[in-house]
Image 1 (cartoon, rainbow, N blue to C red):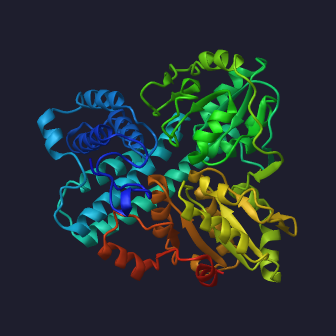
Image 2 (image 1 turned 60 degrees about the vertical axis):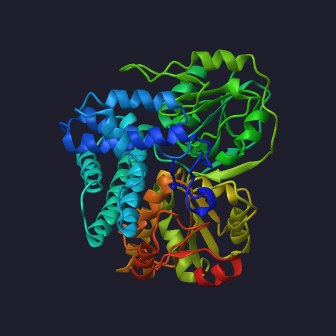
Length: 509
């Protein structure tokens, strides 16, 4: 295997025997074969919706921490062969990181692939809710084909930014799907304590799974808790009517080995963020959708016009002990663009009066390495006249800190899941309009972004496509970005790596 798609890749260069994420070499190789097959379907297929959905879900399934099951990928490859005539020899001999001698062209093509993986994840979330865009489907196919062709660095750089442009469109589509289905998120105090009932802990991003689980557990005596990226579900009006939705349990994805054990109840993984489970709680973990791990019980996809059947989880949960309490109190959420823009005049006035001096966008991913304590320390060190705009699991580094508020505006405004970074884009654009600015970079907004996997790559490309400059990115810069490509990003967009809190504070604040 060779894989360098995530921030934690071995020695900052690439995993070669097994992934730092926990995937085995054989699984990584199968994922490479599946991606190659998707490229060939894009080139030689019939351009049907069925093919587009196959490509979308195949790309999504290869994102870090989604699926670790070799049998799943082998079956997926077999399924994909029905779309085109292709031999196993062709797939095996051509799969893998770009067969491109020029390191810069390889870097650009891999950046396109990783951005498309993130785009396909968000596109699938929307598709599950019945929202689709044929233009985006066509774009994915076109860009996959581009990675198989001889292109100049200039052409590929333009395509990288196109991925970001379509990333904005895809996040807008998902925002529409979520809000039209479940309502606009509202500022909400989310309980982080527990009750004395057995529970199910739901993690990942799939709001439809969340809704159906809440429906099926009504009146059963089983409580529902969110974990990780499912925390923002507590702020949607449609979910607030369920009295068995207790709140959020625990923190970021990388803490699940400790937190899942102490939860005592059943865990449902709906999308990415799965960590290879410990034997001590493995029998309580269920997967669904594209998530997979050898030996875990899997909930099949829903039949047309029917809900998924979560009855096995619910019965299992009834026999479990209540969760052990980790903490108590509340955390605030629900500050998506609709909520923030509803008080835009108050925000604008606070900026004009000098009460708010700066907004710091600290969106993105969390991770397990000690160096990520930097983001907690940075948040703690921010002047009291600054506000953090966040989305994604990076928020767990500072969303429980007692940072207070400015004139009733919380100093941490959490827009939601990583895909809700779109809300941060909308907020910035509307603020630029309010201040009658012709350039988003003239706003009192700085960007200190943390990344881990490929959805964060898409968010970064989305920001670049909008012309956002001087983004600080960390903890480490992507291994798949070659020195020359990095130079272009630095020269054109002012991309920088993080250094230390004191130095970055002076640059950003």
